Image 1 (cartoon, helix red, strand yellow):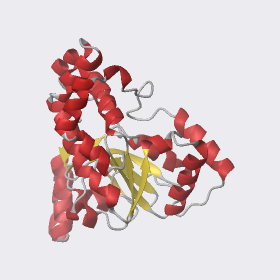
Image 2 (image 1 turned 90 degrees about the vertical axis):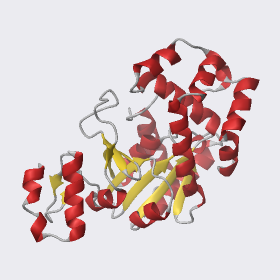
Image 3 (image 1 turned 120 degrees about the vertical axis):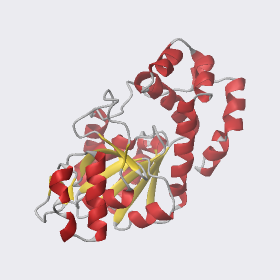
Length: 291
């Protein structure tokens, strides 16, 4: 919807609606119009009566969980959601560096999400976001920060918007590579984001699940039981056999930010890396997440 088309609505709408239309116009994101004549990001929705949001430590399975929820009546709206900005992946992928985060306040974004839809990203935890997400089923996914750190480095090596970052990472190996990354702006952004979203771990109204549990590191039985509990949280009952089929389909899917293989931190770790890990506050954050 172009700004010129929105402008005609403004005198007929409330202040909050005016602000929503201005956010749409300023972002330049295309929108759909629902049957109730409201702007929405997608008309496709599942039969689940809930709206859901997945907030994660980066590189903890953000879109993996989104893929999982497709099997219980949700449609994933392909956005990467933050507190005050979003990236729009409805018609783009990670190669499209022109599609960097654009300003779009969360309290406006949630007005454009329908029942049976799920949004995902790294939404920080504070009073504003909690208020904005009232009425949403909230899911927090987290991961051991040692592995998340290495996975974030691999992600930066492949997808960083700055070619100099990609080149610096690609010409290094082992602990030297990780130490360079830990002293980069890329890593500081990763750490800041992780700290800001970590508060969801202690929120009593949020369902929490670790990446390790999702992948069965603590045993298949515990993993399956956690998925059953997640589905119950979203008002959907599935038996163990159904869960196994859903998990098989989920893990074979090619999700938005999926890596080629699971990250191992062993070849990147030494005493110098561990000292830097502690100095930067990663170990403290790990403890807050139960590691």
